[in-house]
Image (cartoon, rainbow, N blue to C red; front, side):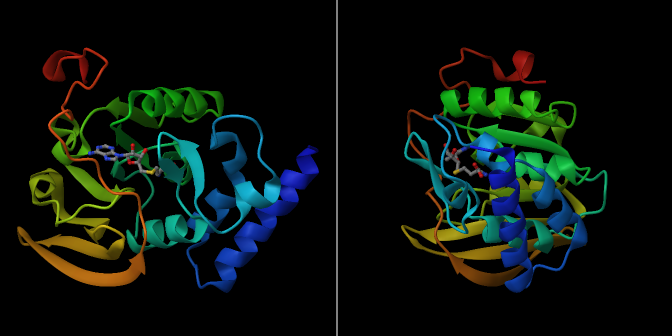
Length: 231
Ligand code: SAH
């Protein structure tokens, strides 16, 4: 595959984002730069697949998020450069890379060890490791040592509002999460105002569900201890 094929497909993706109403220049610029196809593990996929406006399998029953939804969610966070963002469900590392390209500091939590390792590797290879850190663990707990965050983004759907994370969101901070049971979900935007959380419902979406289970813990498979190795 020639580099030009990827570039053409990526430019077409950005045009689609504009047509669908994405206006934030920093988001559009970052998505025009981050090579989405290199974040998809396995053999190279066709440019139309990598840059089409749909999710794509990254193995482990997970997907790299749809470009429009990535752009829309990040736009909704109204980020200023240099703000710190917690991402729950880093998966391929693509959303983290877009945020890093925008000049954010990114703290990504990913529960599947193989995906956490993949994200770390590809982010390093693409030159984003100075701005992104990936933690393998249960995102429902957030990343207390790095709190407070200016913003939070959920890349997997929680059944309920993630109340446990609000203590880690700064006053004036924003968060966006897909919320809902099964495949019936909506994006919900949250703000912290005078210590209280204000919510606003947005678009209907379809994200992979957040993994909740007894096997899920802070130290999943990597044998790390939370307080010593996480920082
Ligand atoms: N932003 C990612 C989306 C990946 S899909 C991308 O564009 O590639 C959602 C991810 O959430 C999956 O990788 C899944 O393993 C992860 N996930 C599910 N439940 C989780 C939990 N409780 N804590 C952290 N990550 C979780």
